[in-house]
Length: 169
Image 1 (cartoon, rainbow, N blue to C red):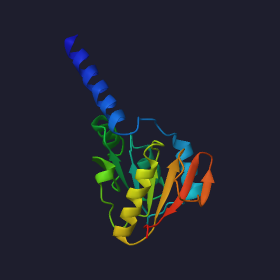
Image 2: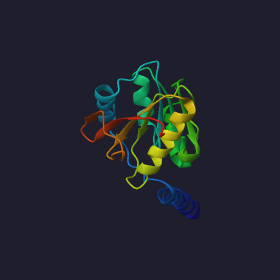
Image 3: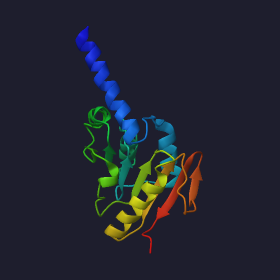
């Protein structure tokens, strides 16, 4: 019994720390993700999608169905393990356990997906602007539930918004 208690306590602690330092884990719905990609930004084999706060890997799995390469960035090591297991057969998906504010996007990045937290959206947008400047081209942002302040959505689908993020002059 004591070992089970400690395992549960460690898992709870990891999730609590993630909430303090990032957004809480809220799973996305598979069909809604696919519809959002289809209606907002039709992914193709030429795309590299980065999922900021990739959770259990559902967005990476959906991106693969469209032929896109994908990278998941997740702070919670338990969710990273779940995501890696769920995407183990997908050659074009990679998952990293790190803070996405410290992650430099590869030059072929075309789109970023985030189901973040409203309080973090301004900082997320600034990070994407910096990455767009670094790689030398705009990056599309698909945001679930939260608007990108200072940008007008190019398209919307239910609670999803598509933005074209450029470097700030």
